[in-house]
Image (cartoon, rainbow, N blue to C red; front, side, top):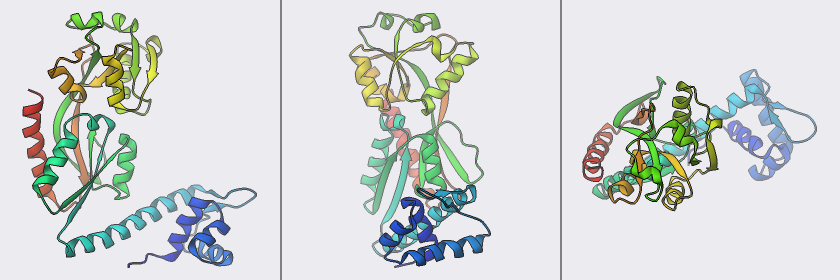
Length: 302
């Protein structure tokens, strides 16, 4: 088993427990040994890592930076050990991050299809917000991420899979379902179910509202829900209307279970990108996933 610098392991454990004593117990070390590890690391880095005083330990600003890189190093060591073991067993392991919107479109099915066609491939799918997915990419917890929107970071490459648009999702029982387009004034009269404030879907909607001099506070937001499937169920049962990516309820639209409408003066389009590190080795894998995505999108969305 590979071992990374014990001082970095101690730093991570002290940060988790906020206590030299508790970290010592978990690491099977004495408390003075843990304190010595941290002092030595502070000397090596020329920085104070913890604010010492009464109560739980707190990281300094330098400590925040150090713990970020310590976790990155820890992940790289774990990935190294895993990759060497996988190489012996002829296994390719892939960790893919997707947004909550992608959970409801064809992306999971595409990844499942790729896995079924490649017997030696093991895929782990992690769903989270875009910001958290980017952070996990930076620490190599993810090999690639499927996200809505563009990325501006020289550490990553990206492949555009598709474009998508946000539209108004309404129940077939809602009077708006008989219309071909909805005005902002009509939208203000509806009970609105939105994603949480850190959602890219919600933020894109708000930015387009503001470009039309409309505040989100002018709308009747009655529910905030993180799960797209739950939002769709609530909309189908006519508890309110929502702003969703068209791809997230394409199946319901095709089967006539829900209605999707454009909103006047709000053309909310965005890219769907596959983002990965520049040193990612399996570019052939990306090409195959892209090919499967195009095949599924033609069959599912038409």
